[in-house]
Structure formats: C-alpha cells, structure tokens
Image 1 (cartoon, rainbow, N blue to C red):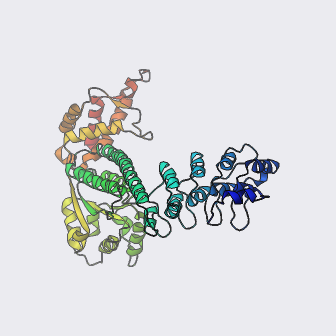
Image 2 (cartoon, helix red, strand yellow):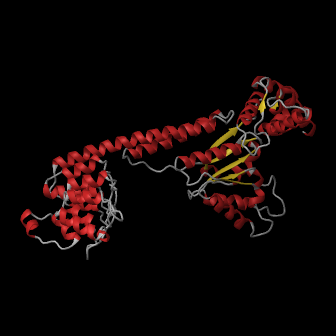
Image 3 (tube, one colour):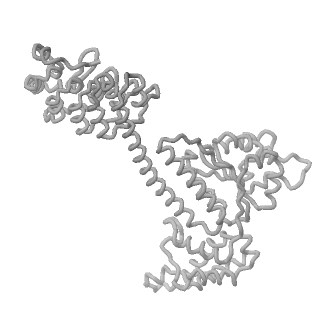
Length: 482
C-alpha cells in the first residue's frame, strides 16, 4: 500500500523519472520533463504499472494532479488508467486519504463507482484508510459526489460492512449510515417517478380496451403490486420475486382476447416479470402432428419459441375431442406437453376459447386448475361498445392501414353509430362477430366513399371523410355475407 513520505525524505529525494517527480511533488521538474518528452504522460512504472497520475494522486500532489488534468500538450491523460490491482488514480487517492487529489479527479469526471480487481470502489478504500488514520475527510469528499454506500465488493461487502473489521469509528459509522439512508430515499423517489410513468403507459394501453372491467381491475392490481415491489427494493427491502399466473380467457371470437394477451405481454415485460413482451399465438394445427411421434416435438418447438414471453393457445378446446373416436387423437398429448413446462417459470400460458367447450379442456387434465389459476370471461360487445371500438380504431390507424388519414364525419357520433349497428345487424351476427364486425365495416365504408365521390372532387376534407351513410352501406355489405 502506498504511503506519503514525510517532508525530510521528500527534500532529500533526487527524482530522475516522471514517476519520481510525481511522488516528490517537484512541479517544475515534472513540467520540464513532461514537456521535453510528452510520451511520458501515461507511462507506466515497472511492477505496479502506475501512471504519473496514479502516483501524484496517491501522494496527494494536488498541483501535479491539476497540471496533468489540464495538460494541453500531445495526447490526453488517462483518467481511468488501471494499475496491476485494477485501481484507478481515484482509488489511489482514496486508499491513501488524499482528499485534495480525490476532489480534483472527481471534478474532472473520474468514475466514482469504478471497481478494482477485488471489486472495491474508491469508497471502500477510503473507509479502510479512515479506520487506520481516524480521518474521514476523503470519505466525506466521495460522499459529496454521491458515492454508493451500498456498493458491494467481490466478497459481497459494502463499505459499511468493513467497519466491523476495523477498530471502529462512531463518527464514520454515523456518516455512512446517514448517507446510505439519503441514497435510499433518492432511489425511492426515482423509482416512484419511474413507477408513475409505467402506470401511465399501462393506463394508456388499457384505455383502448372496451368493456372487460373485471380484467382491467386485475391488470391494475398486478401492475401496481409489481411496481410497488420495485420501490420496496429501491428502499433496500428484500422482496420475493413474483411469478405471473397462467390464465384462461373465455369468450366468443372478437371479444378482445388476443389484444388483451398482447397488452399483458407488455405489462409483464415492463415490470420485469418476463424478459420479453412477445406473444406466441398457436392453434391446434401448430401443435398437433398427423402421426405417432410428431406431436411432442412439434409442440416443444412452439414452447421453445415462446420462452421468455406468453404462449397464447387459441381455440384450446380443439385439443380435446368432443367424444372418443377409434383413432387416437394427439391433441391431449400436445396439452400434456404444455402442462409439463408450466411450472418452470420460463413461459406464461394463456388458454383461450368459447366458454362451454373450454370446460372439456379443464376437465381433461387433473393438473389444469392447479396450474391455471386465473379465469377471465370476455362478454359479447353491445352495440354501444362496438361503436366505441370503431371510434378508437379510427383514431389509432397505423400508417400501413388502408384507413390511415381518413376520419369520421361529425355526424358519426358514438350514439349514432351504436344506433346504426343496432338496427342494421342481428343479435346473432353481433354475438358471432363481436369486435370482428368493425374492421370489415370500416373497409366497406371506405370503398363506398370511393364509389360515391366524383373524380372532379378536390375538397381535401370531403375526399377523406367517412359519413354515416358510408357506414350504413358498409353494414349492408356485411349483412349479405353473414
């Protein structure tokens, strides 16, 4: 370990090298030698591999440190150069209680959390020095620059942990504990800000989901709980890791099951439960083979594709035949393959399908209800809800959509569109199509707009505005094929 020499030894020394001048503090000699030979700027000495900045910082030669930091000659001083122990000049200043040098290095951007080969930060080393010398000045300097009191070395020890190994210092303990608590508060405030931003992002996603009140409440519960765990950890508390439950989405086609699965994928990734936000959608044909021995590998490949995200099994009831046939059906084998990985934590599985047929799936495997713990029912949309979906879609068209740039006429209020849907479609049609009714209705309406416009039309508003009559024509076309 480097120690500063006393004045007598300093005066009697006859430095001949750049490192010798750096150690002695002979600024004029140091300047003369470096200007004569600028290549010595970051020269490393034998054995220790220390640069002149290491040496001057470790002996608190503030004038030489300042000269090096302000060097205007060829090259640039290496602020983060490491010696044989992986220590930077700031480590050298910290381990020898050189507060002046440490302050200069920090003011010029030295990395305060840089770690030596043993994982120690400058604060670790400054604490060690303070225990021996009963001088807290370098520790205070590092704390002014917000050195992390909770940083751990390779043995898992924080600067505070090292206090127990020395003779101890009540003043030093009090200083570190106070800063540790302040840092925890700051981290909690930062986590709070990040949490609010994430909740706002989730709320924005949920705002595009029509109906499904119970499921929205559950999404908010999960999100809030998971994000509060982030804040608990920021406060230094130990919190067990959460795992997302496997789910069943029950309801007719077009009720938003796939869309909600995608939102759920974003949520679970956002709060760190899943490493990705991908949703892998599969059906029976993606999982079940035609011959013996085909289904297992085919299903395992899809499960592998979904790892780290959500496996969304649509029309899951098709894996279980309605009645036993003479020929073996391999759907049950696919279901068992999926069940076998559901306890691994590598993938979240969502089974989706009609409510009644899904009862076959639930009854087919005794482990289903133990693994699938959340059941959500997606009700059919009312005419009012379909009108709201239509407005949301028109307000959120992607550039690649054929409806991008188009808008609804002011007469196309949600109330007017709801009345139109109610009068122009049957209950059976709405129940069978649900949200799936909206896209073809809008595409047909746009085609009707094109049909009725004259080639002479140059009104930019009229040429891109879908009217209530266009929507009505779109529904008429839909009714003919339904």
